[in-house]
Image (tube, rainbow, N blue to C red; front, side, top):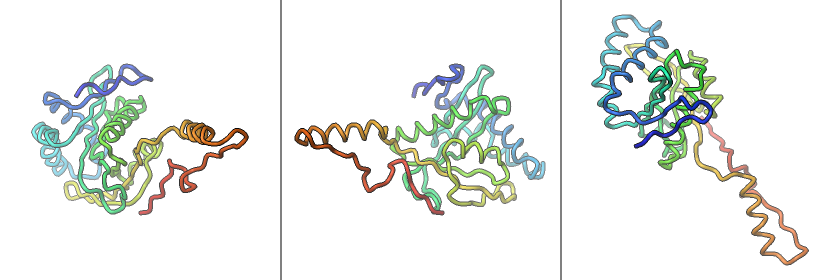
Length: 223
């Protein structure tokens, strides 16, 4: 698979799927970000064991063999990693054909730079290209920066989940975003109007209507 994009706003971003030789850089970035985010609530020895098990190069290589990883690169190297996973979602996610963003890590140097938004957009495009109707993820309730970021990019809280790491129970929000490709609303209405006008005699006027009276971009989600 070729590079997905060079970001239009910042052409320095290069986003592409992970390759076998990327495992050392991915492992290093994930270890660093995980430690920065969760290290203060996990005992040092337990944290080290967890990092050595889940974020070693072998574990990353094994995961990459069965899960898609997208990487964003900046001028200084690897800026972020998005790891996706296809499996049945929790009950609070109504879209059974959804795609999970299992891990989404951005190097501290690149936070606030636009790298995270560019990578998240690439994850969304990846899901759309594979006919997935939604993305979902879990994010720690005590990480307000991450929760705000996902809200900003269209994700909504649909439930909660407990995740255990190194004996510590983390209470996470389950967040979801509808990524179905919808036609441009104005273009669709204009096309309906034109088609209806052609079908009616002169002097009659057509009035475009919404199917079911609902905005096609709106979905009600209940947890």
